[in-house]
Amino acid sequence: MQKHFSLAPKIAALAVMAACVAPAMAQTAGSNVVNVGWFHLAPQDSSEALRTPAGPLPGSGASVGNADTLGLAFTHFFTDNLALTADLGIPPTFHLNGTGSLASVGEIGKAKQWSPAVVAKWYFGDGNAKFRPFVGAGVSYVWYDSIELTNGFQQSASMLLSNGATPAAKSSASLSSSWAPVLNVGATYNFDKNWSMSLSVSYLPLKTDADITTTMPTGQQVHSTTRLTLNPIVSFLSVGYKF
Image (cartoon, rainbow, N blue to C red; front, side, top):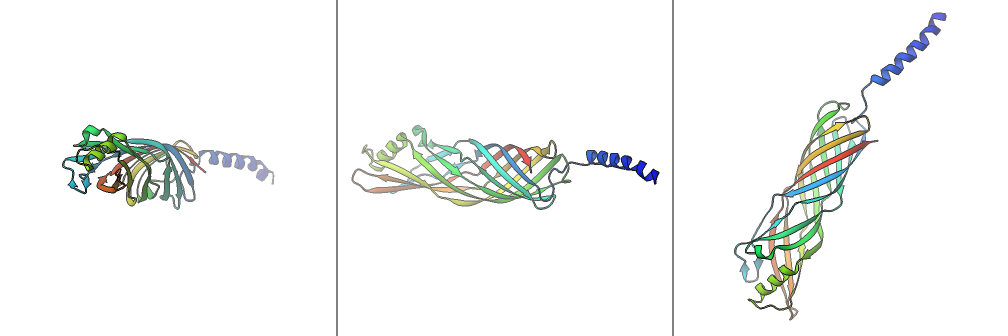
């Protein structure tokens, strides 16, 4: 009986040691991870010629600049390897610049892009590993607001639609919304059971139709259209917390 009592402290000590050396529960089934970081959007863009009522404007085009914004992602692990991520963030502002025959206009306008996404991811390796690469695929719904055209472009549009005259016309624009697939690859490094850092790169095949409405002094409205191909590559560097 005395031997049993003398073994109890040793067993307790071994249990504590085992708990200390056990692997940290980093990204296992049931885990939830919130990531906050920096989105960098780099459009691989092109555009069609601006189509006016008189026909396409030869050589006209536009390019879309890069954009940066604050990003937020929430990930739930259904198994040690399969997870679902919801990507959100403050909508970035894209600036559109004229090219070709519109290069002299400079900046054409700007717009904010909303593109929340849901991405299914497969994490390689053990759920308790420190370094875990992953691949993913999902879908994003993209729409735009706060669309503004510059005074320079509006003056150019007035001259173009009035055959060289300069009436005090006013132009506005709308951009079509659409669904876009998301392809994703990245890796996470787990510092401990709660904190981690992630870097991912996503590609979105994305197009939008631009409709420019110009209201002439007579009240007549004239529509010009074009199609923009954006195809952004999106980098996301973030810090994560598991709970």
